[in-house]
Image (cartoon, rainbow, N blue to C red; front, side, top):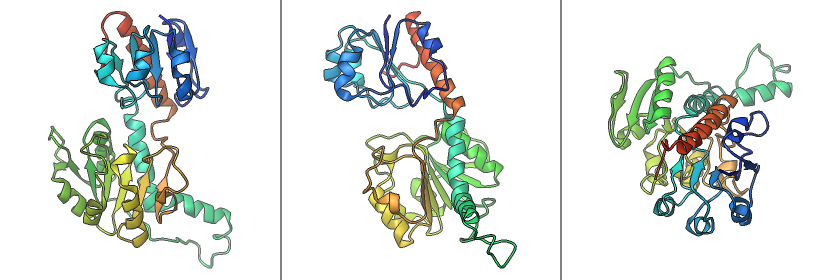
Amino acid sequence: MNICVLDGFTLNPGDLSWDGLRQLGPCEIYDRTPVAEIIPRAANAEIVLTNKMPLQRATLAALPRLKYIGVLATGTNVVDLAAARERNIPVTNIPAYGTQSVAQATFALLLELSNRVGPHAQRVREGAWTDARDWCFWDVALMELDGLTLGIVGYGHIGVAVAEIASAFGMKVIVYNPSTKPAPPQVKFVALETLLRTSDVVSLHCPLTPQTQKLMNAGRLAWMKPTAFLLNTSRGPLVDEVALAEALNSGQLAGAGLDVLSAEPPPLDNPLLAAKNCFITPHNAWGTRAARSRLMNIASANIQAFLDGKPQNVVN
């Protein structure tokens, strides 16, 4: 079967091999695809792989040869799942490939907020330590994580991994999850309001749904301690960005660490780009080579399972 990869660059900017995919059939692999080129490029493909390129009902109707859609990510909102199901086209995703990488990035953001490694390193390069009157200095108060409370919103694979790391740092862990599940003794389930009011750090790890869009709005941000940090390595629209920028700039919240925004890349007028004490990384928490390699292998395994008549990781 002919395979078309619409936007493969972020998965493989050149440090991985597409050979595993090519062994499954003839491949056309595009780094990026303009929306207007989706149909022409995928016209002869029975198998289409996409990361961010939208495959909506009208597009699917224009691809009569299509038999399988593979999303090169965990989230599948770029595909009209109902339209695919009506044509008996399985849509698969890549679950849990980046759990440890995203959990690691969550703590990279938290450690940046608590220790300000980047800004202090830059000050050293600028000569501030050389010119200092004392043998050490810090520009902002440094924070020890041991004994602080981390509130985790969403207790899936990544939430569990973040809880484990937090425990290793000596943090107390509380969790809000719509449904409780087995957890180690050091993890306590609480109501969302309780979590926001009592946590020193709040970390978002829940999916984006109509119920969770702008979950962190002005009202809920106001529940948080003025000394608290907000972390988001999940989905940008979980946060009301205007409200968060106002909370940071007014001192209502001490800081934020974000790997995702509501629009990516962000427009220059996104208020968080200039907000106080806000560290933003460019949606790269998932992007370690190890995680991308797992993603590539699972994508190939998903296609092989489909070809064998035993599709796996089907979401529709």
